[in-house]
Image 1: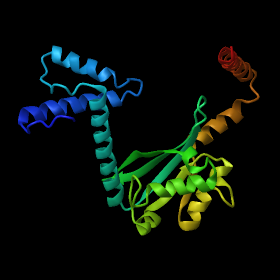
Image 2 (image 1 turned 180 degrees about the horizontal axis):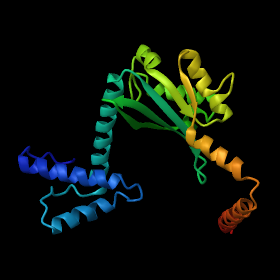
Image 3 (image 1 turned 30 degrees about the vertical axis):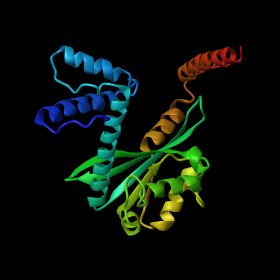
Image 4 (image 1 turned 180 degrees about the vertical axis):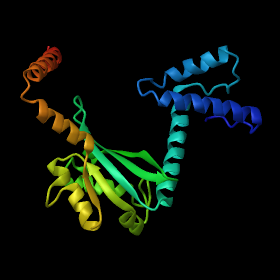
Length: 237
């Protein structure tokens, strides 16, 4: 915040309400930061006392950044205090920009209840692309001292007990796959082929000879090609 406000109970309560508003807005990715001012205005019209001059895009970004930092610190504390954890990684590529991302989730157990946290969305373009070596280095970097979940080398090596990914060669390659490399550092590591991907492959294999499925698949492919080629043609014109 640009202005230094006196620390009073009313100011603290008003600030907390604005932070909660920014948090709820952040939970809806389709909602731009410009909506923050409108949301604050609606609350004021309903008689809610809020801070003046803190209802702009910049303030919303600052609130969301502070919330994200607090969540990262809490997740890092949880992972540090747990006896073991597992990871799940999945890569994707944006159709328009071709940017490659690698999503990493951490699974832990807290008081008998499983919990899952998204700890990083890595920009693989800045790390020389989506190959096994760079993905392995990117995953390791998350748990280094400067990463989002800082651990000591010994804690990282001994607490990580399993890793899940899809069944592509980049992950499960017998000599240089990501999980294969992780397994070399941690001989007890359990490598898991993502269950959702396996179910998808099993269903596709089970229905591939059914005529109704083939017709449905051709129909959806033709719709995709229609819209895909339409936008390509429009962009060229």
